[in-house]
Length: 227
Image (cartoon, rainbow, N blue to C red; front, side, top):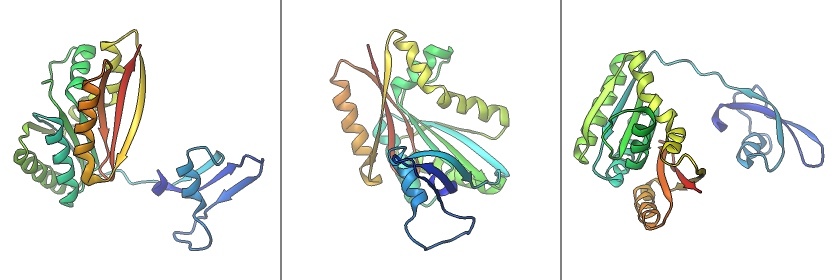
């Protein structure tokens, strides 16, 4: 978000109104108040106006999905992909509990194993080239059933799995509420973080699952269903 906000207006706790940034592409005058306020997530002031940078729609995209034996294998592939310099638009991790919830909620029959989803953008040739490179990396980390689609309807159907992840979780525990927590660690420690967290939560009485993983930071959502 911070890279796509040009400037903003915010009301501070004392009532003062501040406007940050400008239309200039670069400025080294003073503090970067725009990113400071964005990063504060509402604790420094209430954002009342925002000017966003528009992005050009990619000419082509490919959506891929791959299954793994363990969450660590899936996380290792995500890390290896990022370190390789492959340009991935999105990377999403869904653990086996999340996939089970999706099957229950939507009547699907997906293999209930840790799953990675990718999106590659660019020209048709470039997106396909990046897809095949990731397929090779996945195979080196025990990945299986690697599939990719390019047709709009097929891509929408695959991403629907991720978009409905939270709501699918309620299918397992309809009388429960969800508590979502985010974890951010150095990329090199991501696989370890997920594995240790999984061990601790498996030993607890809570129903929980993991979804989401960004390509820029070691970042995951842990969803815990509580009665």
